[in-house]
Length: 329
Image (cartoon, rainbow, N blue to C red):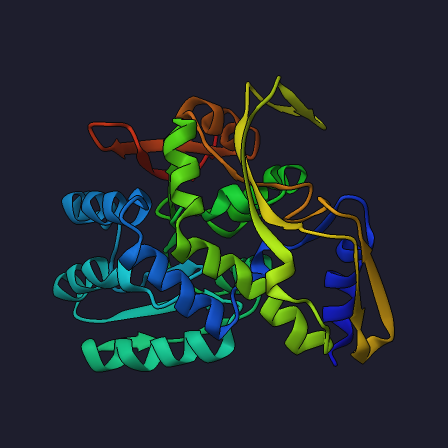
């Protein structure tokens, strides 16, 4: 099996607490299961509110676009949220180069084919890889850039990596006309949040981690020996290197072992011992979904050299879209 897969997944499974990186959920099956979350989970407000905001503010979002522009989406999935923007840009410019960036090769390539069917004038150039590699690729391209990162996916980046991640974005959109469009979950109602992530569609999506571990490592994780784990937390300021998240609120998700058990990863000759009640977290150190106040994020973005141009939110302040640019002063 792939050496890099062993080196990135195994350390978390052998650590304490145990964890699996959040991106590992998104193979082809995981991406399809997440589509079910967005379409069938009645409590999952992120997709509905974000789509509404995108439709309402399309003209302002694409204001800087011209015929030389590059449009790229991080964590693209099926790019369904991009349809309205793509349609508007094509109407304005007549042509468009769109770069969906995603870890799931099969899924993003299939989605690219579907986009071309919908928009024959669209030049789709899928990039298969992690976010950081995708941003390096985007930086290398000529033309003004709109980099889109939606669904509050930024919140699933480990806290210690958030500032360097935004600095990499800042480096990729360094021109006067370049922009970042980012979506953040600003719902800080604990009961409402837990209801979203405890819904059967989201539990099925999370369980794909165990399914994929069994497939990739020839392991014997048994689904019926694990319960879903969802916990909302509030904590004091987190001082991470030279920046602070003030009063962070976040979600821990994963799976709790229902018994003492030993799991074998036959393909690499390793075993994992789990105590009763022990949790395998989705992401390290278990904080998988920070619920933001925009001012919190804005301070972090400023430290990375980004400045807010405009923000849009719904009347209940459940979700916020922010259009940002590099601070060139």
